[in-house]
Length: 459
Image (cartoon, rainbow, N blue to C red; front, side):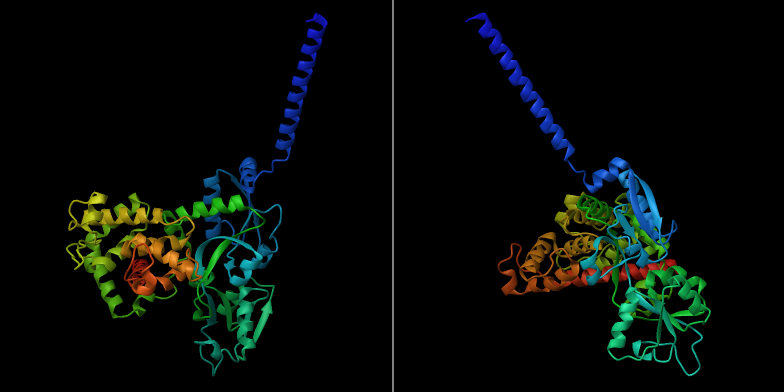
């Protein structure tokens, strides 16, 4: 081959190779240039989480958001606001990531805002002065508000609630204001400047000790969830938040923090329960004291509230380490022989071993609950599985979906569970027939006993 032709071919090949390299570099640079960081990546890159808070650095919201920021290993940039309404006005602000300002998660608000995990339940409460005008009584229901001077915050959820009663024909004299915070309104009630106001139960619980001239008249609503709001589309941040909170909400640390901020000592509620609950209170003194150290020990090891474990044990065996069921389960935590062997429990009638086994088992069940189930419902599903078995819980979720219920929400699934005892429903389910009403009562009983126990210990 002519040497000039050879030189030409070599030059031409090198030119083509250079063009390919240049083009590849350009494509890579363009691709890199157009890669948009996710909300979470942006926060982690800048090492700052921008949040809106209502209560200042002493509130539960600050404590939780600080824990979350520590989990992400980022700093906090906080915008403090005096009211919820002002906090909500910052929704979709490009300089804000999360709004944590005691916002109630309602059906209507869920259409407007992107809510994150729920961290507490509250009720709207009518708070009144003990010095009601002559001829009037402290109201016990909405029908007794006529003639009383009521002041509430304008544009609040409480204004919507009260307006719904007014629309129904109730005689209510209400004044709306944007000048006073809810804390200031409570102070005005305490001074008898106004007769009544409406606040959430958490607000009153935190402040009532300084409001000796006030009283809780009645509740106006069912319990509502408090939740964070994501200020703009942030799916990656939202997913990370739910992942963190699903784990953190089951820890003893979280329970201690929540109790510290929201001590429900407004009334000695445990004395108002029925006769069975009075027996429970008596046995706290005579039986629980014998085993309390075991509940605390294994609760700390497995990062679970010891009061939860103690309430489970009472529901299972009435704190009797020798208890035996006709189905063959035995001991303080009523373990089956098969489950005991799996957990490494040699003697089910030994209180320490049984509590160890029961704690280990409920921890495993919490971790086994599908990830789509979040917040407090994760614990409810796990407790139900402790009672009836996880297989039947899977069946109930499947059936819930078929019946157009939400399989990830306990309040929906508990409606379906009793159907597992009816042949027309269980015949096509994988795990078959079950006494589905039992886990529903089981979960409710444990929550009731735990509430009584924690209030008893606090008093």
